[in-house]
Amino acid sequence: MPSDTGLEGGKQTGQHMTHDMVAGGAFDLAAAELLATGFQLNWQSAAWGARPRPKGKNKVKYTCPTCGQNAWAKPEASLVCGDCKEEMEAQASLDPMA
Image 1 (tube, rainbow, N blue to C red):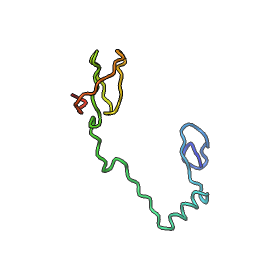
Image 2: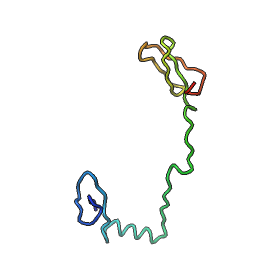
Image 3: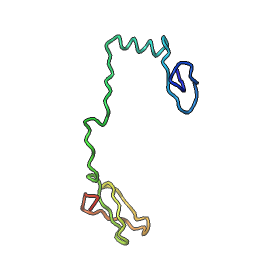
Image 4: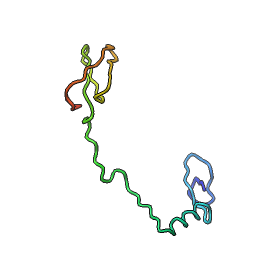
């Protein structure tokens, strides 16, 4: 049941909402039936065991041949300099700090 307090009797509408489970309601009965089968829900954060992606490993440095403006994008990107309207050229370096 929607509730602005998370407790029985709270307002059912508002900007900061939570809920309260109705005893004997549809969710309560379905959850009890599911849990009776031995079902368990094991929560795990997506960040656990995940390694941070190294930055820049999939990027290529592009440079405008006219003004020298730089940008980094995927190797297959087709970039045009916003100032000169020239097609930017891909550089050999994969390091975005180069």
